[in-house]
Length: 303
Ligand code: NCD
Image 1 (cartoon, rainbow, N blue to C red):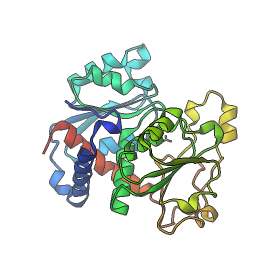
Image 2: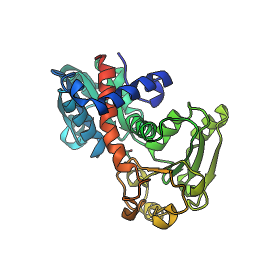
Image 3: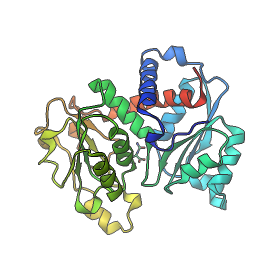
Image 4: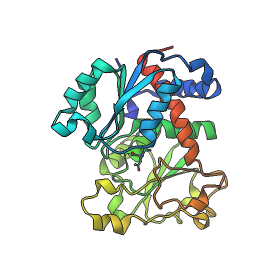
């Protein structure tokens, strides 16, 4: 039985197959409409979510399956003190596959250890968010045709942003990738990621100003400052509007650069950018459904 806890749980070849399947689902949705008839997904969300949870639920419904779950810890037995290990043992009796989001790093790994069904990490604290990464990669692959040879700028909260950590992990396996980390000093990318890039000889640089580097980028990945992971509100208020991508800044970028964002957006992308052909963040949401459909089929071993 397989789980998806970290994007590296799948080889590059397996990811290619998954993306091919997702693209086929996009083109021929009717072929897949009953593939999961009689199957259930449990979405166990101990942290707020709009996209990720509804995307998993939509994916399963599109495959003809059904959905159970909870959308906040307060309405689950976690509020009575139940452990993740016990919850997943119980969920294993109800559902065929589980997507779990939890504020603690490592929660999905604990769940997988005690589960009888495939567990998908839908975000564990500030650690990883592999299905957002699959979404980001499918978007890039579909809109650019490939996944190698890019200079990618990651901008915003690189310290707590789990989508950033997962995307770097995943893209570091492709050829000719260069990372530019754009963040205030306080929200720099964690050292363990820098060490990984150094070990692999992958080029990167760290800068503070977006304007200084935007012209070099093939891809710009904007992120929200992760308020819920700050220890004090003062720091959050000081940093929350550090970056705002507006038309003026975008005019410095290449004509074919893509702007990605995992969403939710707060202020970091001005709404005036939404109509620019380079804005890909709402398309990402649609690709997220296709890739989650492909993932559910793959983890359930359905042809
Ligand atoms: C992200 C997350 O939850 O980490 N959202 C998402 O799943 N699309 C990004 C965020 O919350 O900022």
